[in-house]
Amino acid sequence: MFIVASLAFITVAVCLSQFVAFNRMYRYVQKEMAVGEPLYRPRLSVILPCKGIDHGFVDNVKKLLDQDYDIEGQPGFEVLFAVASETDPAFPILKRISEEEHRISTQVVIAGINPVRAQKLNNQLAALKQLSPDSEAIAFVDSDVIARRDFIRYLVGRLDNPSVGVTTGYRFYIPEKGGAASLLRSLWNRMSAWELASPTHAFAWGGAMAIKRDVFERAGVLNHWDRAADDDLSLTTAIKDIGLKVHFVPQCLVAHYGDGDWAEVTEWMNRQLILTKVYYPALWRRAIFRAGIMGFWLVCMFVSIAGYLVTRENIHLQSVLAGLTVFPVEFFFLLQGQSLWERVLSDRSQQIAGAFWKFCMAIPLAHIALPWMTLYSTCTNRIQWRGVTYELRSPTETVVV
Image 1 (tube, rainbow, N blue to C red):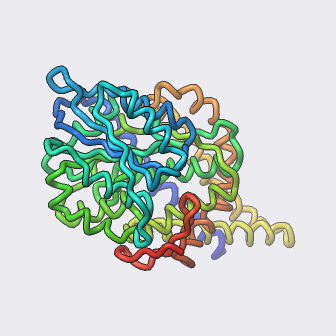
Image 2 (cartoon, one colour):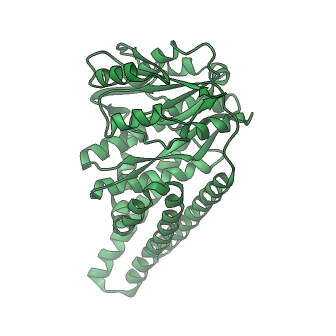
Image 3 (cartoon, rainbow, N blue to C red):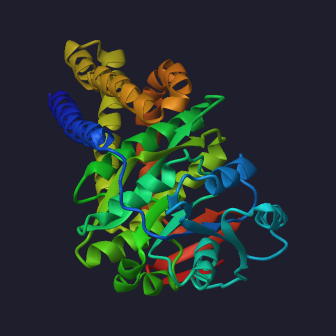
């Protein structure tokens, strides 16, 4: 009876919490999408740190340079590319693109190596030293972002709200081949996105975030970044420390190439969780609590299934059926989410819709694998990032291993 009651209680609690989080996100996106194009358009510096060549690299860079962001008939932004050294595979490509670009002011910054911080942050800090004096705002983007032409306008336009410290987009993984590991990453990432609508737990995403220059200075972001391994969550903490909020811009949701094998996806998820653990512990604790609940749910399910196979008693069957009711609820949220994300990513709607049944089949696997993949982050502070191993000892101490 204890197992039956536990499974019933956990299932109801999980369904209710998902209902609240999903509906909050759904209403938030609907409201934001109904708002017209922003009018605020400050002079802007866009910083793009690079290490290696991502999927669609050249196309993404060209889309960035082709942004529709003019002020008084002239381009209102500059782009600063940053690499560690001239030996980086991205350097010759960026150099050529920069030399051929005549409309937008561009610069390729050589950042060098610093053993006390992540290379991405070192690249960004080097680029920050080269900002144009008249830049009023800064946008940080990643080289694997596939941006629509009005991407920057929407990302920066919401900074006119005095309560907003940083605006952010987010990634949406689309597994083209649809392997199990890729589907799990996409599902996990979608549920993480629900937090972006939370006034308390919203966070910036380093692939697309913007901040006013004076707010960046007032929040002391340079100090937060000096010996860090993470850019977005440490910036989130800095912004919230001065009483400002993170504002998610659904129009800046970007499609990401989502395929990966188990090793890559496991490494990626471990990195996300440990970075959150060190730089945004309140959000990490929420993830660990949910993983613990779902781990307990899974154990109860296995005990009930085993009990029924051994004894054939109906009490065990009732317990299993109680636990299984979580799946139709999650299928419903997945279906509702499909229509929402298809609207936001209208140019990729066919790909999103076409993978629906694959995601449905991946949900049971997610219940088996994701809790333990999440709980593993309690065991280590070591991450792998683009071939480099980092030990995150604290928010202000990072060691390259």
